[in-house]
Length: 586
Image (cartoon, rainbow, N blue to C red; front, side):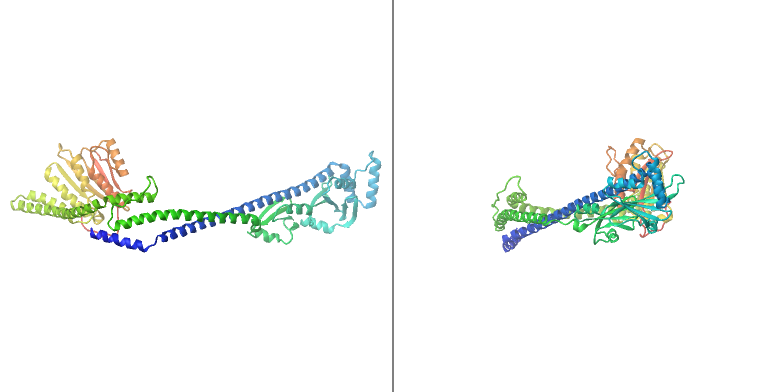
């Protein structure tokens, strides 16, 4: 009693050294740091999420601009294809163009006059008329070029019926052959002119559409976005100023789109960091909301911690009263309250029962001493029984009753194995114990029972846990032996299968019904208690011990023996590297 109050008095002095404000400061600053970390994480998350949203918006706008640029290029190509196909639909215009390519200017003029004279129409349907109508139909069309292969003469046609014939077309032919016929800021479409009568290529018609203004307009509609257009991957038709297209495509810092429109390639790209930038008002709003949340959280924490530490101070004061020996102190608390109310309730109950607990502690000490004495006595009893059996055996031998002496010797050996042997023994020792146990029953059932043990010499030193076979044999004598017959027999066999030791206990007794055997095997596999009235406690115990030591894949199984009886199979893991005992059992 005095030692208990000494401990309580020491704890009281320690609590007096700690000021109540220490808990307040510790909780306040801990929660404040937590709130600041949470707010900082939320601010970082909202900034990151806003940047991702802005980036996705800009990328979506860039996708639209790229698609519009592709549509524009494809539309210009479609217009050129329409004019080209329209040329072949009009035999008059096609014949005029073929004559223009193959004849000199004077011969072509005579050809045109002859056709016009022979025609009933007031307007001559020639290539010049077709080109003029094309300029009127499509304002984006800036130039049409006619290249004749016969004399490599190039004619340039412009709006307002402006024609520049007689130019050298050799360089233009070389550009077309190399696929480098594009012009900066233009969409150029080349189509071959073939003579329908011979299917020979006689020249080219080249359409040039405006592209720069359209691409610049699309580029300006997207913040941070840039466009580039190439012809056959190597000729830059349009490109943003200050940007190296090849470097941008390889740079992971850029978001790049590439689309094809026949021989043209359209690239749309933007720099991710710039495209994800937040505006100053947005950034200020996020930071301001974070600061406001932090201030509100800190104020709430201060109020909450102040109330909490006030309740803790009341509990500490009551505890100080108890250390002085005053057990009448009581704390107010609310039913179904928080943990502090539970502490207060338990504190009141502790004070009420403290005196009774102190009295019981003395009684418990006395009971503990008595239990120690009983434990010591329980250790003496088996030794006393073992020594008594040994004395009876010697007396039987002295009286000439050697058969009783042998039976007592077998029993003494079994008691010795229980008292002195370790939990892990060798297979040879286990088989010796089984032989001693079987000899006892051979004495009892003289002429009615025989046993046999078969084991290879190399397995006798295999370490196993103690008493895995004896309970199985005992189960046979309790449930399986047929006392009406004279040829009862039990055979124990051992063999090795890779890293497994398989032990078989086979008898020719009464056996088991098939449904009972299946139910028993299921209980053994699931390692659970059997629910029948006739319980094989020994087998279940051994099965649980094997699974506990070696694992769930090991244990006991039961099957019907042939021609009659029961075969119990015990599977144990072989653990190498242990001491082996040489010998032979047969």
